[in-house]
Amino acid sequence: MWNNRLIKLIVNSIRDLLPILIVVLVFQLLVVRQPIPDIASLIVGMVCVVMGLTFFMLGLEQSLFPIGETMANAFARKGSLFWLLAFSFCLGFGTTVAEPALIAIGNEAAKIASQGGMIADSDSARADYAWELRLTVAISVGVAVIIGVIRILKGWPLHYFIVGGYLIVICLTPFAPREILGIAYDSGGVTTSSITVPLLTALGIGLANSIKGRNPVTDGFGLIAFASLTPIIFVMSFGILLR
Amino acid sequence: MNVMNGLAHFVNTLIETLSDVTPIVAIILGFQVLVLRYPLPHPGRTVLGFCNVLIGIVFFLEGLKLALFPLGELMAKQMTTVDFLGLANPLQSPSWQDYYWVYLFAACIGFATALAEPSLLAVATKAEEISGGTISALGLRIAVAIGVAFGLTLGTFRIVTGIPMYYLIIGCYITVIVLTLSAPKIIIGLAYDSGGVTTSTVTVPLVTALGLGLAANVPGRDPLVDGFGLIAFACLFPIMTVLTYARLAVWLAQKRNSNSSSS
Image (tube, rainbow over all chains, first blue to last red; front, side, top):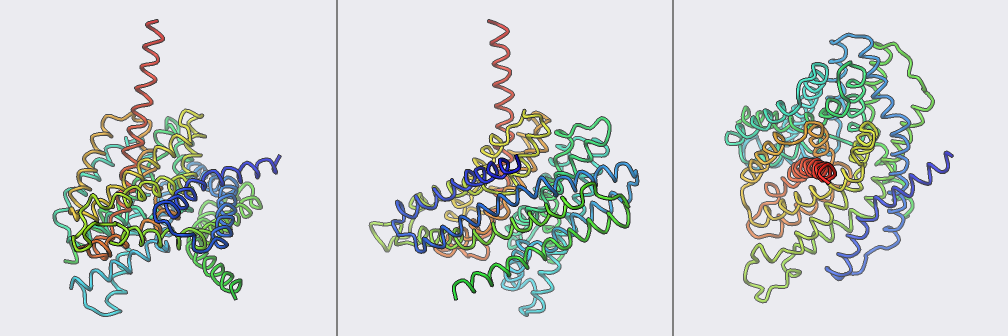
């Protein structure tokens, strides 16, 4: 039975990856009309990707989802709001601060800032700037998870928050320095890694499940939405304050 | 030599992933041991599962780096060069219509990478599970993938034409707000979450390569400033497509109901 499940996962992974392979091959051979540079690495790489996706999906069901939901239940049973919120903040902050995509974007942003004359043209100034930006995004994700968890506890409708958040972004945009706009908008997208997402999803759904009167579908989702909205606001404010 | 290189890469990716995971494990363990003091129900299975996730991510990234990223970057570069555009007059600067292959490539690669995104898989699986099958995982993923395709097409179009980013982004935000206010409440959380998850492991590196390649090759664009912004569009459009998909599903269901009740 376990073997059947594994085979099903492998078949699913292949099915999920097939479109990428088709797009790349069709464009390379028919549009750009160049041979595939290294067929051996393409094949080995694709086998690795299929294996990787299979293991990931296997581990997801075994650990990330159960951990998130068990902890959500345990916090609900413990009934201490303070510890739940502390955990929420740490989870948001901790998963973001070490995120490789964010580190890369922070360094790029520092380059732009020093080119634009916003900060001194030295390595230490750039490193400081990149670190402050990363810290800003990580804190904003921590705050986002706190707000999201409080929303689930209180059962407040999600769309008020999101629409409000977007209105804040729209209002901040004219005041933010041009150079930081692209980074600010992108920073919302890069904060959520493949490990954070399942954990946050499970946390939200677990909380919504363990509180009476909450519907997991309507109330359980939305943590990731906050986590990708607040960094935009925080990074823009960061840009405005630094100017 | 080749094998050694590959192994070194592999170890590098492992270390990178570990440094990404360590804070998460520390937080979970810390709270588990110090605050909750409540043992995990299946410790062995959980640890095994966590190892599987780790191995999975490392293999996934390693495979992408080996197979897809070099090819994707090469193609992004080739497709944005002036030679490829095949202009009748090579001195004339290309207009935005000349980049049609780039738009098509952006749309296709966006669609395909979104379907393979592990985070999206996780959210879609969960959504299907808790909604008791009302929300289909594959339907949700296709809606999101169409959104990413639209988003990237608009994003590349913006880089080519140089329209200021904030006009388009604010336009998108207003569209999202309008769609939200009229969408079925049950889908809103999921729609917003699916916007955030589309861009992680697979999409970001490929899309960044495409954006930087375009910005470097289109006359008058600065890769540092104009290369950004594709991810933002790839996050916003899925929200719109999922909200639209939900409205469509509700509308079709109502129509079917009214048809069956009238006949």
